[in-house]
Length: 370
Image 1 (tube, helix red, strand yellow):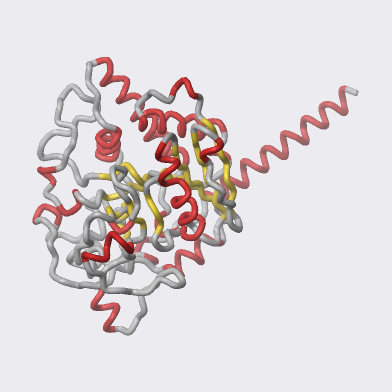
Image 2: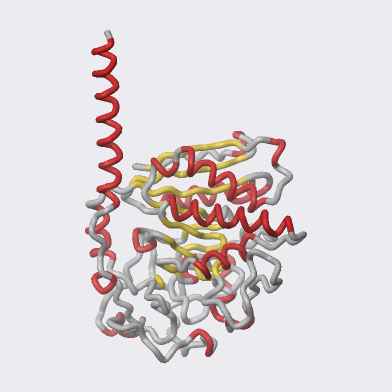
């Protein structure tokens, strides 16, 4: 009897070990060199070579006009006018080994992290590389109260159609009431995991509650279920495909509004006693809290530092925003990949010439969808 029990325990141990090795080896595949897939080209250069812009089926290049922007949430603007970047956001120096052919935008950071714009990456090379790695992606969204009523259905419908198509995706959806969950079924290779929030903690700070909730789920199960995890705001809607070009160990979203402003004007936390404090004259970019991602461990690291910062601020009688804590985290821990404003454009603003293709549209929560 004891022999049979030992044999069974040995078999279980072997199976668990194989599962761990399989996941580890899957994630340790050789990474692509940046020059293999990241090749920035200007809009005019691509057009002069007769190349059609790569977009999802049914999405056509179109010239947009301001009066139609709000009504149609257009996918981009083909105007290739002169750059309106602030002088603080342009640099005479280029990272070694990379030739930037879009002088109107930043394509690589000082620490050589790519900034993803439409047309700067090779979909074919990325697809071939990642499809052999048997990946599973996660997308977390937190929708409670009126937010769920107003935005959740549109978010899920658009994400089903455009987020990581062709790959396994787990949608982690947190609501305060199961009745708030819209009648939306997952698509092929997609799974919905729906969680409810305890009523007694609704009153807490929304972002604090959202991040703490996500951190708990990462520790309990998400880290063993997906290879990459993204967290997005519910008031976003995908306009076209968002795919493996966004994958990275630590992914940050450039704020669409502040990208075009001078660094000295960024709304960083300037109070020295705050854990989110960034001194004047310091900082790289201003990052948007609506779209962050990376490996589950990197997302968990961000959450843990944010929660520590909130606790420190409370002890000092301060209350800095989640976005300020996020910016402090990425100031100290440089992201490995940055998403351009195309991945989170506010639909109330007409896209400037640099934003040629809006992939994700964000609608302000103070106004209804058009």
